[in-house]
Image 1: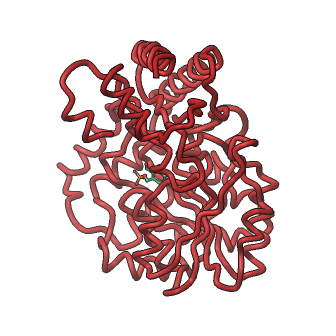
Image 2: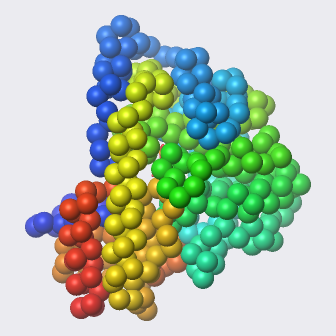
Length: 366
Ligand code: PLP
């Protein structure tokens, strides 16, 4: 859809893109620029700058209740590399990576890169794709090496229930498997406390926490994330990291320190903007006949059910071509919900209103 949109002439409302529409706040850019001018232009240690790991450790504890010493943290090239390394460290050839569906597609590629097997476990549409621990646990076997829990979720915006997450972690621990907690959107949680999975389980040593500056700090292009977890796994990950990227960018690590420890007002403002847009999305979806979605409790996605018995890709192409609004078809997010359309509300209130006007007209006409 992104490529089709790039080739399209005329005014489009782009609601398919999964990144904040805000620029990185100035104080972060200034800190990175002055660090570079002061000579921070060299490799750092593989695990990352001690001050950066300290800042991440303090943020995890202070904001999300997740306790890890800096030496249980590795700074990575985005949450993406943290996930890749976590999968490589936990999934041996032939072993299984389980993921509740609908799911962000990169986990499947990452399982393949580890010579592992990817298995999507569909969550029920009737509960808006809430995490159903029993379904995940039923799918576990001695071959299960890791389970990814993405909360808040891309593509559904759901925040998983702590009891369900806890049950999955307990079962994983029994199989000597890991839960990879993909919490890159945790800073954008709207309806309740933003607590990390490792904070509320009795088996934090079986949880590997993935985080990132990308989403809540509007820093996608800096490529700065982290993996936190059991010391033995992190030591292994650091060894792999030496051969993949050596270290995250030194300049980006200084930017992350400024983002995590500096003034928080610019990020709070973005959070409030996302929350306001979320409310708008809920209202507009409610008001359109036949359209529905699970309540987006976090991230910036609404997973729309257009109520049509048609492949989502056809509907998405039609909406783009005839009505100038761009959404991501549900078949891009595994096999669980092929008829859905993911809407990203990382766009201004005016453009969202315009986008919903177009969706409303388009679905009525389809
Ligand atoms: N996890 C999920 C669910 C995502 O949607 C993304 C990015 O879109 C990432 C991880 C990786 O983000 P980054 O590598 O920018 O930190």
